[in-house]
Image 1 (cartoon, rainbow, N blue to C red):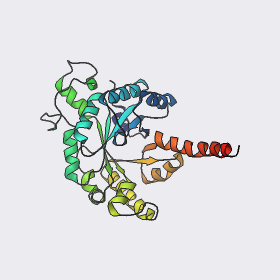
Image 2: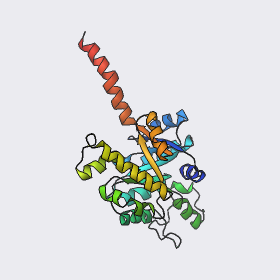
Image 3: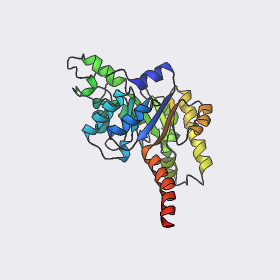
Amino acid sequence: MGENRIRQILEQGGCTVSSRLWSPLPAYVEAMGASGNFDYVEFVAEYAPFSQADLENFVRAAELHHMGSMIKVDFENRGYVAQKAIASGFQAVLFTDHETPRQVEESIRLTLCRCPADGGRMGFSNRRFVGGDEELALLERADRVRRVVRCFMIEKAPAVEHIREICALPGVDMVQFGGMDWCMSLGLDPVRDKALRQKAEEEVIRAALEHGVRPRCEISDPAQAEYYARLGVRDFSLSDDMGALRRFWNREGGALRAFADGL
């Protein structure tokens, strides 16, 4: 278990480049890592089935290629999954569907140790995040948990309304605007109401930067990074395996289907 790569880059003021996987298969993580292009890999556990063994193997594969690791968790069972993921070695947690500063505060407490310095909810654990060192000092364990990067999806209308209060909370390291959920929470159409969606996203980015919080953006094409960089964004997540497969199946599969139908 090395240094938290994501935290290290943030502290140095660098940019981060990541991509997302729906699949927990370590082979996919290794293939991404072999490219040498990514600082960390995100497992979108919100969308996928997985076991605790999957979490450990996912992180092991990332570590082999000196990549950090992030997990995106559901709201309802976020405490349990986030704690198990941290104990497995994940370096960052992306929380979903929060609406109020109080919910954000609770998620931060759920992922800090129960010690005087933090007042969190995590107890003593001998999982692999301590690197197999059962003699690791208790306060060093707590510091390792403290250095986990905590990122929050700002994807509900109330969360956007309270964005400055959320960004002012100690322990909020990153935020990410979720346009689809935000539109759904207001009954908007993401295409028809694109201008409103873009305005809300820019407000989230601006508020984050004002409070020293890193805004993170998902993009489907590298060309989109320039727009966000002009707004001050330095953390980018590029597409995902499901999106790439869908594009391949639609484009290449469509071409082959047309050829086969013409025989």
